[in-house]
Length: 636
Image (cartoon, rainbow, N blue to C red; front, side, top):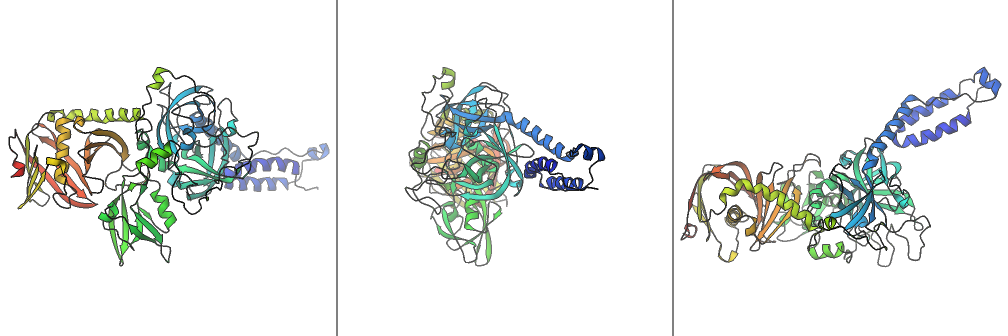
């Protein structure tokens, strides 16, 4: 009896298996094995007589998986955005993340499109959109589509759960192929994790990013990377291209969604967002351990006790095994965040809290955001001057006929904007779009209404209480300054001339901080020379994973050279504030662990004070007395 593998049937089936193997390698192996087993069974007599192969059935589990994948793509496609300049020219991608129209993209996509742009969805409609905030270093931009409050949006996943080999799908509008804005889908796997991409002659720096072999081509930039569950786990940004024709070579890179979560509140502030530096440089030791090379004197790391030669054991909760790993972790956090660090010196481990400094100056950021600056220092792997960037054609190369215009580039005149649309953008130095910052300021300031009973309550305030050990405390805040009697020791901070000092010593300036708190309560934000919404951040190194880390809204107020950052919980209650007398001074962290009533008005009764990651004291305020001051008791 004849027995043979039926190659015609097998060829078709293998095509299905090849596609499915990207997402379901184990199923593909089983299906292939079943096909071979079936192929080695005898043909039916009828099939032999007819000279035709017997029809094979695709295993049900494969068909079911295929349908689930198709359904997932159908569900997420409405959230994928095709981005154009306001004239409708150029090309790039994005993804909606909320029903009110906020969408993520790449900075290098939106930077050339202008402050206003057109965005197409797979419903075939074109929507107006406005720029909100940008992260030039991390290559992320936030825009807001207009015209609806019920936009479809993607669910954010947890990119920390990804593993090499996981199936992923890149979506967007490469080469402007979809004139009806229906996204192109390419499938692949996670090829690698925690990749670090050096800046290629610019500020753009991809830290801790996702590598995938899903095809990412010109026009895909800014589009979403989904997992099999339809969760957004990255924003596609970079690809390794062949030198001619900009054809993807199989190595694409996506910014992890968990990094973007950390920056999202800052992006909604309408600011030009910056990344962070430790205030110290690092190098590899003989066993690849991460050693501190130099520490900037006066930086948070210096004030916390970090010194040259110390070994960094963990940073932000992650063990450090190489300099590259340290750069990866450092690169996913905004400036100003306080993060835990463990270092080893002489065999002894020390745990500290480090406030991250700005990676760039304000001038550098603004110049680069406007397209006028490049990263001044060269890094390993960065092309030398005159060499092409890795993802751009060499000088003299001609684009292929199928290549779209450069992402975000437009040579056509922009259409006239409506007055309603114009109101959504306001220019101000240091901001991408100050309109959105003003909106967030109003939201937070409205929470201060519960403290309005303190308005106009000037004069001398006198508090009495004790610390956690029962030591007596007397605190006086007057128009002339602040005074404190803690046990037998007096402390004084004059306000004349605004020469803020670290008083009591090692507190970061607790007395000056409390004077600013009084000004906020009695005079409101109007008492400060500058006010802006910073974004969201955790407090005091309380860093879980990206989904569970509690984040607080931050309102920054400046007066007489000092800065006060007030933190609001989700319910609008103030959790505390940070005070910084000057840029080079340690920060005084004041946390409100308990609210009560003093003087008939809400007031924090338990104050926890720390500086440079070290606890200074916990004070309970039990009584309050207000006097109209003709002379200040604080100076006595």
